[in-house]
Amino acid sequence: MKAKHQRLILASLAAVAVAGAGLLAAGALSDEAAYFRTPDEVRAGQATVGEAMRLGGMVQKGSIERLPDGVTIRFVATDGKASMPVVFTGIVPDLFKEESGMVADGKLRADGVFEAERILAKHDERYMPPQMGDIPKDAGSTIADTPA
Picture 1: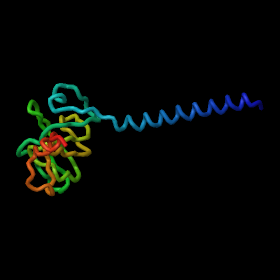
Picture 2: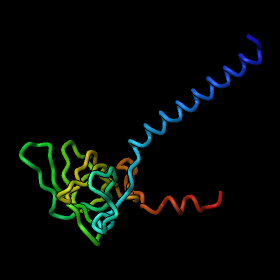
Picture 3: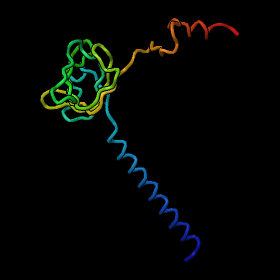
Picture 4: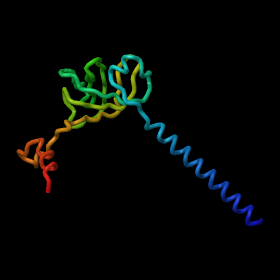
């Protein structure tokens, strides 16, 4: 076999390998792709039943209900315009509480309930670690703006 044919076969095999790796990567990413929706967008029909998505909003005050099995909770997510019931089975993050931000990964059921597979709790962007003590929360901006 001539060297020219060997190079052609090698280049063809490399192209097939790269295409195969690309298809595998695209297949793996399609399982993780999820649109971010608010309760108002879901109620407006921008989400379909069974579609993987992320639901974001606030946990409505007084809506957290823990079921007798000890691991399932029900609560209502709201964005101020609309509300949506959510059910989750698992351990919720420590920061998950009423009137706090949350993002839930899951799917919309036919009965209008969002079934979450994972809950992420959002903390306040003004968070200050306890080790910082009584330093004012806006002290970082005055220190950074001071000329050296």
